[in-house]
Length: 452
Image (cartoon, rainbow, N blue to C red; front, side):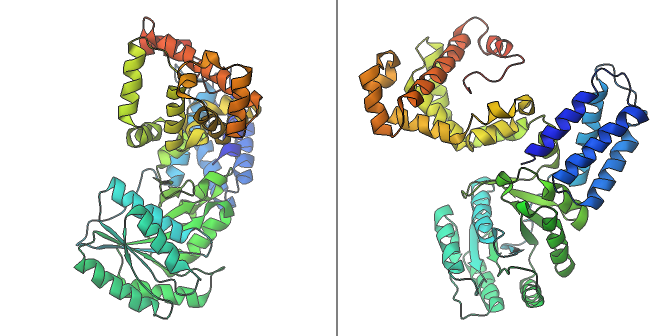
């Protein structure tokens, strides 16, 4: 998300390098570029106007700090204003009620509402250690109830059964009673969607809301609809007392206009981002972290948190001990690193959060993708244990056998071995005097070795 906006802003910031002060003259052109970048990102026009004016007020006449250039000063101002625009801080779910905490989920058809409930249930179970129940009041869409039941089973949430011949309000009331009897901490209620906003849908959701009085009313919206997402959220907010918004499909939106428009237009906080199709692909929304990503500074905090949650610590300790003893980093170790990377969302997700990735040429970034690493994993899986431990034995006949077994080409194997060789050199560097510090110095100003 925000790839195009990040690229445009990076070019704008570079143009200010070498100048000693931000003035009306040099800021005018920069703000014109910022305005165009935001419009191209499909940010709503009122939002663009308000944002640019605030940045202009903050920028003109600012004395550059001793260690900063005008470009860096503008980066700071843009980052701070982006953070303010998106809500300053993370708004957590309000669960401080007598159980069950009822969360009503609304949205248009196709926005990813039901899938989001599955993701939210998983997030509450894994991160908040809550006992979660889900129920579907969508009696119109074929298989909607079955879909939610499947998701509930997948994430280990309780499922309250309902049928298409029941009334949505009756389903919701019965689900609340059942959740109390089962001592559920949280009850997530799915509602019916429509292809567009209509009076009947709004009336039904209003009735549901009045009947169960939820502590949270979340609106799920497809981020790829751009500023229309913010306008749709406003229409729902006018009809319902929304407490927050969930933006879905952010992994497929290179523009990101919805994230910058929703808070300004609705006044409601974005609480979560849907970042993929899996039930684990949901992350809390942190305006300050996303603002850093937009301007190319990455999101190290989220990266660290993901590593804490998803990296196999035993496997990591095993590899560290192996390297410390001076043993060689082999293809089996390399395969384990690929699996760990996939567990953290894949290379694209990692690169999105790494500082400085906006400086990497587009043609270079395009060569690094998750399909390539999945191919590498398949190649290693087709090797014998001996070949994984001693890659030097991989010659012509062995490569042909492995290529046939993994459905790849010999050039794919050669590319794997080249990247493996780079990773081996990184690990060897770590064993020298200075360890990780020496490695970091060798990487100064460069991309992480082993990625290309």
